[in-house]
Image (cartoon, rainbow, N blue to C red; front, side, top):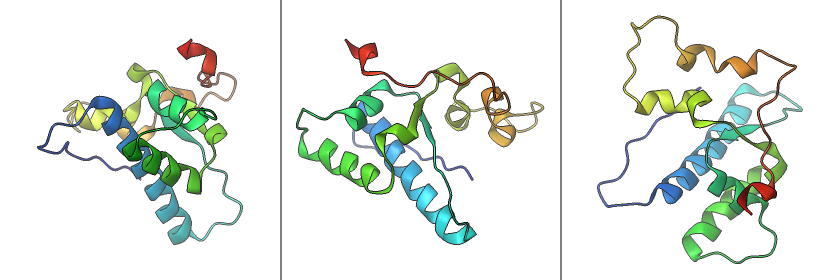
Length: 132
């Protein structure tokens, strides 16, 4: 399942939009878990936003209300270690916002990124040392 949204007319920063996308990911995962009636589903979430990952892994700093509410919403359904980093150029979710057409041949939009099929190579997991 995939979901894409249009940015609001009111100016919003890119980090806030990325955080909203993470909230949307959690909502979609909750919906799919409820609708598919699978037991013992292990969720993994992918983002190309290191800022979102830093917010989720943060244990010491307090956030502004906007960020705190969204981080809390994300962590109600998932844990920080369920979130993985994917490079922007490998992020199939961005294809919807890049204006790619369906008639351009096989698309990552339907097949997913290549790393999903290669069990030996895992994309980089986020590490707090990346921000230091």
